[in-house]
Length: 145
Image (cartoon, rainbow, N blue to C red; front, side, top):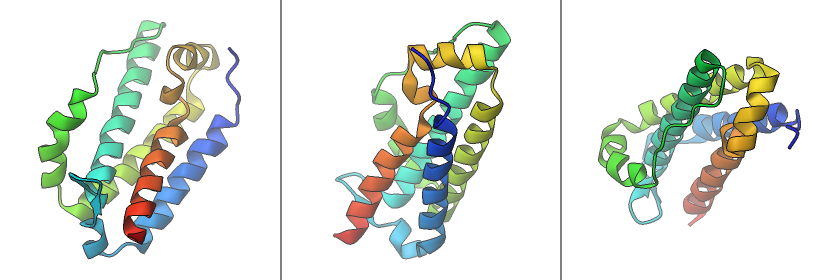
């Protein structure tokens, strides 16, 4: 499977969407519920966590010269929720944007052949826009309600 280089533009567009949203939100809106247990700020803390996980995978892959993918199951979201909720909302937003920017840069400069292997094993580790936009859609929908 060949990696389409448009992932760079897709990821950057999702990061810019995140930046615009963060810059438009009040502190009160950062506390708006998104679903049953999350807030907008928790969503941003979640994004920051998973962007950093991808950067960990990229660093380990580069060091090993082959794809390294640690096992992390979905339960990590449930276990992390109290920690994410404790982060001040504006800081959660800052962390999400910082992590997305850093992950974009790392992906854009990652060695092509290794990036292809990462992509083959788990496309979402390269197409970060998929994860970002899914949560940004949830936040947009929640803020409209």
